[in-house]
Amino acid sequence: GQNIDQPTEMTATEGAIVQINCTYQTSGFNGLFWYQQHAGEAPTFLSYNVLDGLEEKGRFSSFLSRSKGYSYLLLKELQMKDSASYLCAGTDSWGKFQFGAGTQVVVTP
Amino acid sequence: ETGVTQTPRHLVMGMTNKKSLKCEQHLGHNAMYWYKQSAKKPLELMFVYSLEERVENNSVPSRFSPECPNSSHLFLHLHTLQPEDSALYLCASSQQGASGRAYNEQFFGPGTRLTVL
Image (cartoon, rainbow over the protein chains, first blue to last red):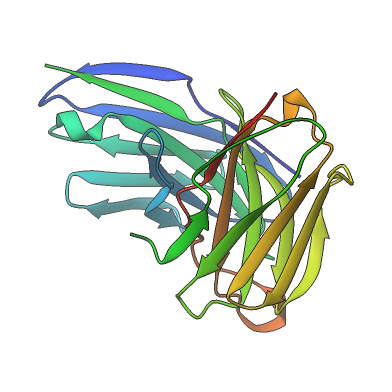
């Protein structure tokens, strides 16, 4: 099984940077996904890390350290539309997902 | 629009009612999933169907009954639910690789917001 831990809520101002940490304890860990979920909408895929290091996609970057059981999602140049819940999910070698409870990011003007 | 649709979007039912949730994926995927999302809690995996066969049932009460008639459609039949079953029910699909291993991301539908009175 897997345990996924991430903060419940984070607040930041428009234009700032926010880093959402995620730690996992898992057997048979394969990779780590980040999803974004706006209120009342479907979770949408943001990133997938299977190797150690940083993956950059525009304003969003995701980092993985397999030896430390740690990942983070970095959101740069925050915009109001980035206010959402961000879900960390670990997968095992069979593709089974284990989600964290999500981090609610609140962007203020 | 993720290519996964769910109906209805909202459902209110009494504890003695019988209703069904429907999910349809237009992505050509071969695996479909039902999740339950309660406030402040992680997404809970309920059922997994791979190639139309149920491959996982995570100790879900029998008042929830899934059905997968083909690889594009998934249903969740509900009967005699409890108020604690009120939640957002999300359907997802993915493409599983060889030997049942799924490395690709899951695509989620918008969910059905269920309220049990």
